[in-house]
Image 1 (cartoon, rainbow, N blue to C red):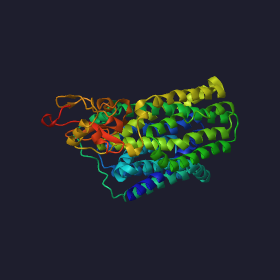
Image 2 (spheres, rainbow, N blue to C red):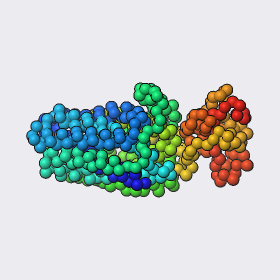
Image 3 (cartoon, rainbow, N blue to C red):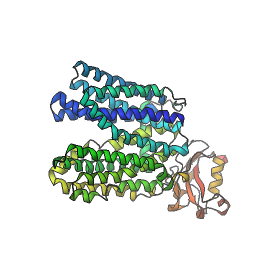
Length: 493
């Protein structure tokens, strides 16, 4: 875990510097232009760079050494912020330069995400992925807790100081990343074009029922939750609540996120991963009605605390499961595609919050946004695929040989096995294998895809009661799966 610690420290520095600079982006934009609308363009440029980079960055992470990508992205950020800091010191910083800096910082963040995710899978043992991803969740909240105040303090001392500090953190991260010893090279290339590989990543996301559902739900819940809490904060501003009190709301939420990240590994170990995700989906609802009728900073802070105590465990648990079952050569592209889909509607959240507040007023606007959150929470709750994802100790990992899988299939109860058509496997998606294995709704989801030749390409957990007696020595589960084996070696059911 030495390399993970080094990676975590480097990206924590990145995160802290970025929170400082993005906090002062609108302040700098307004100071340069005197226009709130033009100042908002700076944050928009950052988001544009991030979203536009994600999909090609996923392809790059599956084709190029991940360490080189992360170092290159860190150097890009250092150069962008360093140039803006130098221009500000010399008194020649203008809005176009600031927009280019924000755009470049978004590109750097977009490059770092998929490469870091792929690197984490390499440097962290599979059984410790939930712990590692929980720590990654925690660093975001630590940066959120101290980044804004530090950025404001630095901006008060000198307008260029937050920009220089971010350049320094990017440079320090690039230096730390050179100390990684693990082999972070990408899997062997398939020889296909980048466009074909990009389509493959998107196709894998869309073809996989669980990932497709979760990405669509993440997109919806990001929009509804952000709209709800932005509306609540805008209502506080409209009611004349002092800025210090509003700042304390963010401080409380960041502290809750840190506590949630500390609790996350234990929660992930003890609770089914699918039900953790469902808990996150419903977490903003309990205090939504009090927020509607009592617009007080303490009520908004309590609602955010309720969400952020669960959020790190839900995010880290499902992300760990996704990493465990995704083929290594698709990790970067799947991460990028999932993040791209989930972040697409985010720029609409401030617009919707403003429209609801202006059209319906604070109370009714909050109630409508809360109702939208409830509707989005029904998506994972109603999904058998989400509810079936078990605790990490019941995730199936690692491919088995074709012969072993055939033995497992033969051990399933009558009617078990998979449909075959010549040399092709009919049911290769793990979420279709429950029925194919003859265990119906009672099975848990397991391994996704592995080698496509003489290897298992899908597997599920079948409860002990649904498996032939000869397999009951496997404690409470037996593995059954769909296999692709040559015709002469296949023992047909």
